[in-house]
Image 1: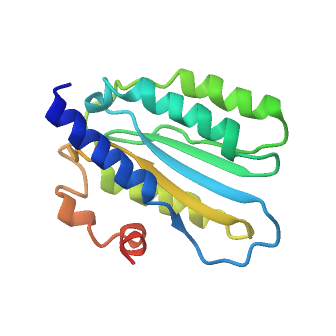
Image 2: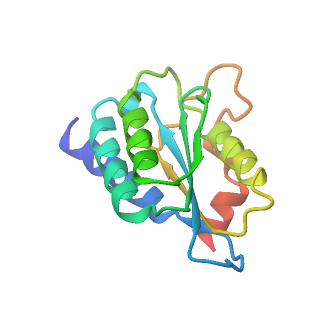
Length: 167
């Protein structure tokens, strides 16, 4: 990846890592729920390994026993989420093993649909009083499939998560 493109990629990556949307909920404990949407489209091919390394570090240092973790690999569609309440170090290692099997092989990138899946996963957590953090890891290239509902970035610009991140 050229120097200019790499700078753009890392700018987007930094933006989306900073784009942690924390819901203002009264957490009854220090437990948290972390939901990560991970772009695995072919445009991420050169960066996916470094992204996975970052996620391994995140799991090792920021995810604690009792936390909920949901990882949603996406591209032109969404893979089945990795979703669990971390009960042991073995659970953390299991998630890392599953992450190792994710490669940037997906055609298209439907960021708008990924936001919808994030919303759906968060809505399933109605009884979860943990503080929630939503993270989207992407290069920001929206290249939806022809059948996608969100044809342009403007089509998902009013997504509730983006609006909260801008507040």
